[in-house]
Length: 595
Image (tube, rainbow, N blue to C red; front, side):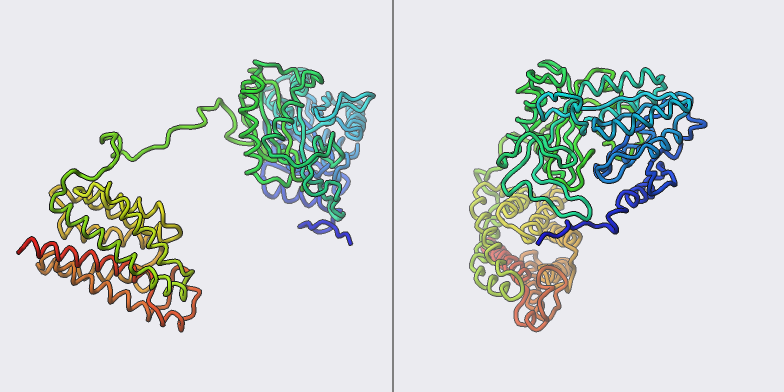
């Protein structure tokens, strides 16, 4: 059984008027004529036909193509947009109302997409307006390049290239040109642009059943913006292939739809049809630009990507290519207050890529990578022993950490920490061990490379903060006081970025007590290695105390207090374990030196 497509609407018959109401509530520069439902006209709030001293630019057509056309009303673009019902040309009276509302002594230009209903209704309105004394010119836009050159009177369909014509005409009018010149620029722009669309689905009209004309795995080339059939239905292809086909079709010398040849300068517009994510549109743009440059020999001066003229919720995109010259570029770059014209797309492009910046310290040092000194000094020997002891302690604790984490987390704490420990043991042969600050920094890099999830980030932050602190205070060697300051900086950084503090049942519940005792013992005059060992006992006690804490950070926050009370926090136990292992080996090294 078929059901109407899902839409966030009220009465399907009110979609257009309610869209207009929302649009003018959003943008204070827009108003609409109080003639609903017959007259649906959006116009600039700062324009009155009695005082407007520039050419008015008016366009419109059936609705369902938003933001076209009402979203392009604004200074420097359209003066008014006439909205029909969904995919239906606006009535003559509505078009006339728009002309009367904004057309001053300089006259107005009607920009009309090449559809029979639009041509007839806008044409009759133009003739009526002329009979009332208004100066009116009309430009018909037919930029479709999907179908063979038409026979008869139908001509090429008007598609998204019309938006570029709007911009050229609007800028020319804003510059104060007379009606004949504005019309001439618009007509010339319309002859310079070609468009072709590609769709993965047809659109669903409000209140109607979604068509299944395109089956699974199929796409349609040259589909019209009202869902009318295109040139061919084909198997779904990678966007690279689709973009190549579309560009070749638009630029075909056989059809000669656009006067673009190798060496020309062009403007590219990639237009979403309503149901295509911006990421997919950008992928298409990223493929189109180099193809235009390398395969077709064209210079791409401007690129516009977004949804400009849609087809309700149709999945797909169209590509428009316009031949560029200084005048057209000037018009496209001119300022506008139209809400849906893309900002920041004007001007010449700098190189797309620039080198990745490196830390300032790299440029001041040799190009050689960090490496182990040929001979370790006393500090380097102790640091190496402490690092190896800490890493091995974590490896030995892997299964216990996983077991605890399986009850309060996702069961991989031990595996994650073990990966980091093994990476450290593998990389230690290249650590600059005589330089404590750089060695701690390298430890962070090793862990960050292999440890996923929150643990990897936290330990990288921990090491970076400690390294920065050590660099600022290691002019005369790294002593106990400097290590305590580094630990304090690491704890502060983890708390700042991770959001945890004491009592949250995290690794900080091991490190904060350790820091407190370390600072206390150092201030009391204890020998640093002794203070380190005493503080490691506080770390173990702090980790064990997490059994009695309610988690306030991480996945453990979703675990009941009864389960939490059965095991300590795995992260805290890991931190206490490597801290304790490092403290014991440092104490042992110092004791041997004293013998």
